[in-house]
Image 1: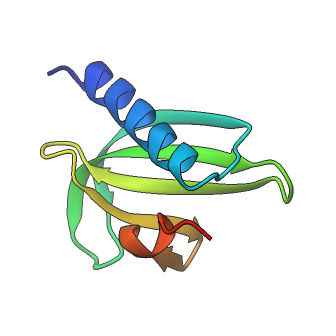
Image 2 (image 1 turned 90 degrees about the horizontal axis):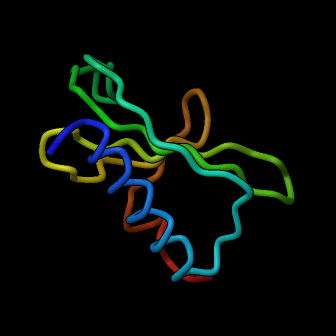
Length: 91
């Protein structure tokens, strides 16, 4: 699978998961980031999927391992992170 195909796959996968929990967004995009420094200070090639929430106009990103397509964590700000399972809970 090419990087572009992986980006498209993650965009659609995350959009579906957001729809399942009724999380409204105005835009969503995925892009490849080579050798990204992760929250545990390790480096990994990633796909970052960013989306904007309309009410507060805040941006959230989901960091995904580009090799395995495993969603690693949610990045909500410069030093704020959430676990994937905690984020995708319907409220």
